[in-house]
Length: 127
Image (cartoon, rainbow, N blue to C red; front, side, top):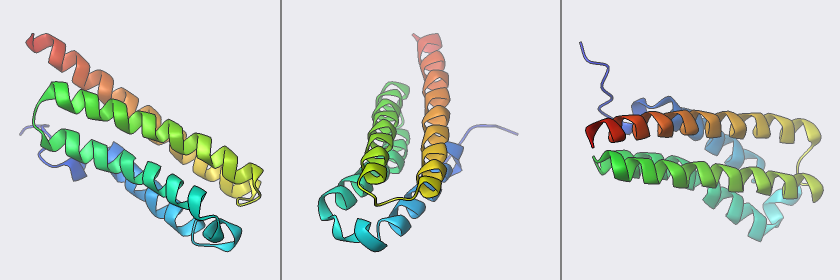
């Protein structure tokens, strides 16, 4: 039996990014956050970018491109974390909500980083 992943939905990084996206959409639909259209839309774009780049990179079918898209996904995760600070400072998030979302975002970034390193090793072995 092969351990080879056949679908992007099987990646833990994508699954956790999906959960994070659902949480971001939920908190940005509430209170002051819902009325801050600029930040709301920007933070949503960032979290959507995380999942989308994992999926798109994998579907391209080449390790070099997957690695590149994972780098973009990880950078979008950093962008999301930065925007969480803005949301906290603007009073759109409680400290508790911020802490939970930040933990999730850090975890997703770490998982993507590990996946990216693995793809890089496999890519380099084939060269």
